[in-house]
Image 1 (tube, rainbow, N blue to C red):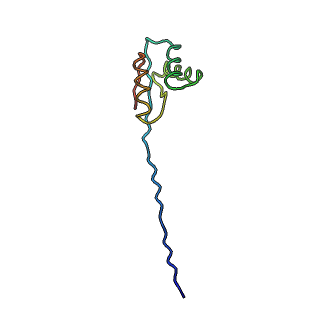
Image 2: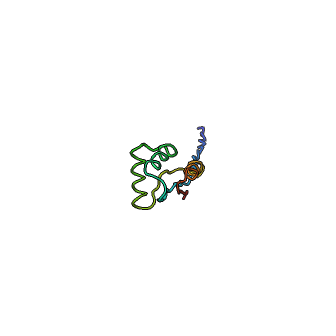
Image 3: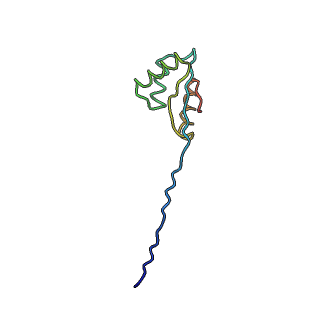
Length: 91
């Protein structure tokens, strides 16, 4: 009687968990709704309706999360918003 050895190979699947951050846009008394909407469409790839909804939330609540992603994805977008004169930060 022969014995067969079975070797089991464990395959480890490592999932890298990336911490997601968010760009927060803050209200100001300088920029128009149209400009904010235009910037959100251009910089954050929002649809016009989505950008308008975010602009309204910012106006009434004082701030709104406008884009989620990794820090490396968000940093250039946030920089563009800041360079355009909007108030934003990554949290």
